[in-house]
Image (cartoon, rainbow, N blue to C red; front, top):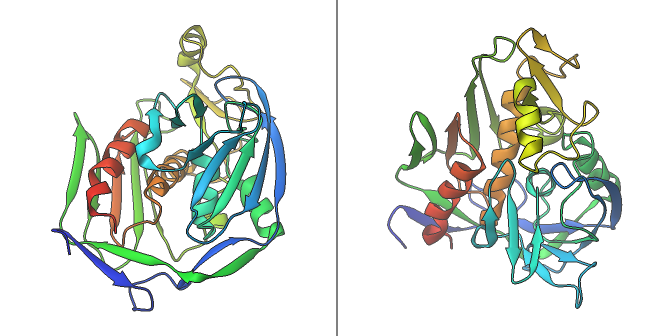
Length: 292
């Protein structure tokens, strides 16, 4: 046992209801435009053997190099999370990974013929629907869980991300924007709650006054009013919202995707306030030494 963490066999009252690893029952394919690259990409998600984890394969590159969906593979966190190994990189992985983890898929091979996971409608709904349609297959290898016994924090000014001891896995997120249509919002999600209903529909969002600057920096080339909510000084440019606190729910969705890079979520309360992909992944890195 390492300091701050307790390893457990599955089957205790603190473990998720499903004690065994799971994969997809069948493959599925989706296509779309990448948020930052603007490149059209096709993604094929397939079942994977127990113990293999979630990983990407770049089918457009020689020898189809693989990139593990692991926190140690993170290479960039500028307005999305990018992972890579050697010459292969995959950008904006958080929504798809959140969907797989949130739906209980431990093992999956994700093939794509380009550098960025498609944004689709800006939420995780289409990924979740594809997973549900494909079905989930229970595997023979048990899951192992880990429990946080002491607080772990990272911060940047008044922004922070933290993991606190708790009896169940829970995520809480707070945001605070000067734009009055967003303002201060919070949302909390328990691992035992429905990911499909609570988080998946929440879309990515941005501020109108930042769009030109970000495009000059070579970002959000694929962003549009069809795949992102945009908020101006006078309110939302493309309403209606799916939830009153949709921006906070989407940030929580991002956090779930980034923390999924640990493989399994810890039994703990994960909290973030005004955070970012950078802080999310810094928090995950600080927990790597505790993983079983």
